[in-house]
Image (cartoon, rainbow, N blue to C red):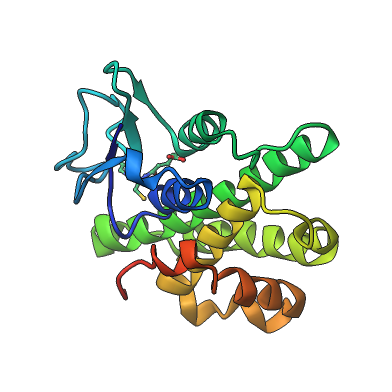
Amino acid sequence: MTLYHSHSSPYVRKVMVLAHEAGILDQITIVENASGTPLDAGNAPVAANPLGKVPTLTRGDGAALYDSRVICQYLDARAGSGFLPEGARRWDALVLEATADGMLDAALLMVYEARLRPEELRFAPFVEGQWAKIARALDVVEERWMAYLAGPLCLGQIALACALGYLDLRHGARDWRATRPALAAWFAKMDARESLRQTRPPAA
Ligand SMILES: N[C@@H](CCC(=O)N[C@@H](CS)C(=O)NCC(=O)O)C(=O)O
């Protein structure tokens, strides 16, 4: 399998953490710096993924898989690692992943607004609206998800850890930990896992 990769992409990191935890990293060949932006596809694998995004995974038979949710489920099924649990926990895992990915989508839009849009066209309420989504999601995790987070590792938890890592990388000044001590404590433990340590993004 070949993974189109970018060291700063939190969605790629989800896939790498899952592959690491599932013990199948050695089955994946990495194509580094394979990303682009909505303005310039750059090195993005557009032939395999018309959306021009990473992560994209090509299988041995040539089929391309995207996005990170599909790739994570594929790798989990292939490895038999059970990070997408059966039973009631399955829906919790998927909702947690959707919540984490939604935070990432909002966080990335904030970055694109600052990086890609000319200064005179920037719209601060749009940026603050994205942060409001993230803040609400963080509050919900702090208030309702801590018991779930104490349970066995799942792909929702992996996605959440990657989302929190990305908030630290790109939006550290917003200090998400200030009013979410339980989540901060969970992340401190999670972030110390070898899979998270091995996939740390380069400093901003
Ligand atoms: N929903 C996708 C999001 C992937 C994504 O947005 N990746 C970014 C890099 S962090 C990208 O490739 N952006 C290029 C673009 O939007 O054109 C996933 O979960 O894989």
